[in-house]
Image 1 (cartoon, rainbow, N blue to C red):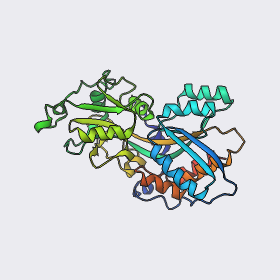
Image 2: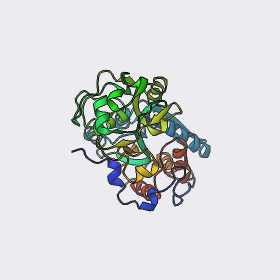
Image 3: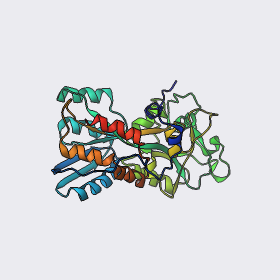
Image 4: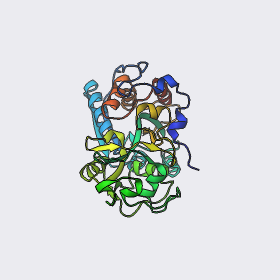
Amino acid sequence: MFKKTILAAALLSITAVAAQAAPTHVDAKTAKYKPAAGVAGNLNSIGSDTLNNLMTYWAEGFKKKYPNVNIQIEGKGSSTAPPALIAGTAQLGPMSREMKSSEIEEFEKKHGFKPTKIGVALDSLAVFVNKDNPIKSLSLDKVDAIFSKTHKRGGADVTTWGQLGVTGKLAAMPISLYGRNSASGTYGYFKEHALGKGDFKNTVKEQPGSASVVEGVAKDIGAIGYSGIGYATSGVRAVPLSAKEGGKAAEATYANVLNGSYPMSRVLYIYVAKKPGQPLPKVVEEFLRYALSKEGQEIVVKDGYDPLTAKLVDAQLKALK
């Protein structure tokens, strides 16, 4: 039995009213950002490609408020964040998955305390097909049958669109697979939640970034790929997903992320090295406060992801104290 997503568990306390919130609006109860005095210095971010554009937008907005802050951002994959935080080459470690226990242990071995994770946005990990592909929905069982060679979910191997009920010229066409490389948190999340920790087929065309995955699918009518919903373009379509074969498929909408019906929803994080009982360096703390402010969450929406509710924002702000 596959465990529920972390996000679904985290959102159990959110009301039905919140679940109906429009995806283009930030929770009205989310506080505006209040600039602080004495914020300056260097800020380095190393980690997630999924969060790369979002970190860049936040950095641009943050620098407008604090011209004396120099920010460097590198987004080559979530697995690059823990080593950078451990070595001290970055103060911000954006990740599209939670740190593994082994990564936390390595961090604690070096610093003497565990890293602090701050949720900064919500995401639907989308399964994209070409915009001209007529397939209506997929179960995660079928997704596993398409992408995996181990079939941990028990389904038979799927290699053509006809096996998924697609008719016409696509029916006999082989399914062309696009995915991320193993440095990616999206790769790890998809492997765990869609493939049941199974192995990818050798035919998956591994891409260095999410934009490359989406671009590949947009150019190939027989293609399918996965990435964060924020990388969606007009050339692709996110397929509604169900957790099990025969179950009700849900679209990758904000409401479905909040109510837990979309089975591939997740929290996007920034990890930091915060000593227990001690404040973060001012520039780090203020960057996180900016990201969690009304202005910061409006940038989340602008980049195509889903904003945190005010209740979730408050929970993250408590972790900064």
